[in-house]
Amino acid sequence: GGSIFITAGTLTGIGVLDTQARNVGAWSGGGGGRIAVILTNGATFGSITMRANGGTGGAGGGRYYHGAAGTIYRQTMGRALGQGTLIVDNNPNPISMYAVTEPAEAMNLNALQALILTNGGMFAVITNTMLDFATANIGGGGELKIRATNVVSFPPSFVVTNTYRLCLDTDVSAAGNWTIMTNAVLTHSPNFYGGPNPERRINLVIKGDLTIAPGGAIDVTDRGYAGSSGPGAGTGDSV
Image 1 (cartoon, one colour):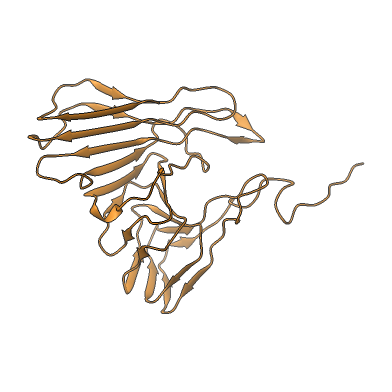
Image 2 (cartoon, one colour):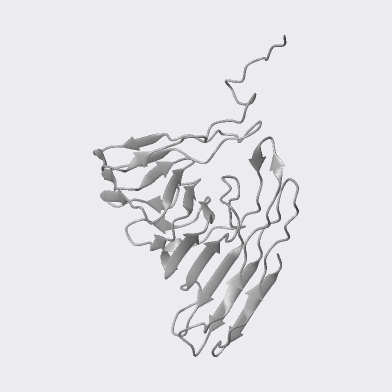
């Protein structure tokens, strides 16, 4: 998808801002585009539909490779640049474990009013991205993938909530206590053919206590390597 950047006093109407990617029908779908709307004298965005989802892909090796969502940034009057809401929404695509939105450069996620990951939307925290789990407002049910921790911090008593799925794709060490609440999931991203390097795995050191509530889980089901790949791949045989 392409890119739309609008600064206006207000925004009204029932139309569409659309940066969807094309549905290719075979192998990898395209990635969604970018939308940013900054209002200087408005507090709502009317009934405008904003779409930045990735394209639907076909099957390869038994897996579907849909494109990752783009980003939608919405900022209302009275907020400084970077203090709006960032949305990663891959509707209407089926959820694809490989369709990850990774920013081109580090961000300050603490400054956002909210980070909304929804409809299969997944967002990667990269090197130098600032994130304090004590203050950040994250929701939507999608996946937040921690791939660097140099400016990521956790509160003394950290609760993994069910408002999003937390993926630990790099080593994490935390000083306090962790609780995985009911219906919350701690996981890692899937590995795939020949990679990634380093491989995705949970390597978590908690210097306090870990509590997993009823219905909570550390679950990495179907997130290993694809068949005949990875360090445990067999040499194969024939009959």
